[in-house]
Image 1 (cartoon, one colour):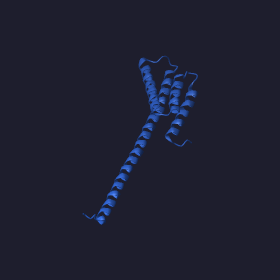
Image 2 (cartoon, helix red, strand yellow):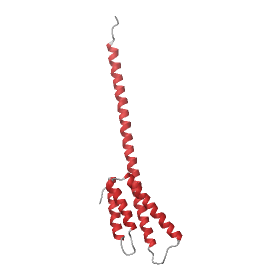
Image 3 (tube, rainbow, N blue to C red):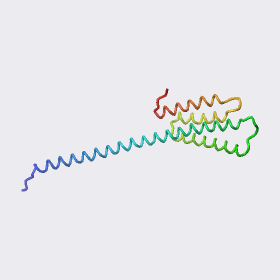
Length: 147
């Protein structure tokens, strides 16, 4: 019959348990860091997409204003640039609709729609109100303080 040397086995077992706990803690730490980094990257992407949308809508707004000049009809090149600017604005709105919450997505489309309704004598104030509301709602979604 072999006698068990508990004096050797217990310290080795404790060391093994401590080692496993350390490995588990390291894995948990890596997982938590990865989650934090993923959230940080997603927030940075959302911020970039929101900023791009606001800028693209403003460029679209300026394109509409160029289209209303009282100097006569635009030449085909100018018209092409305006159409491109409006297309970029609409694409930016669609991108926001993919990543933003419903209230932001709706306001982005509402801003684009209000922009497209601008006439030489009306619509600018309505677009401006919607655009400011959109920017505020985006800031809130990003967790930025509103002044």
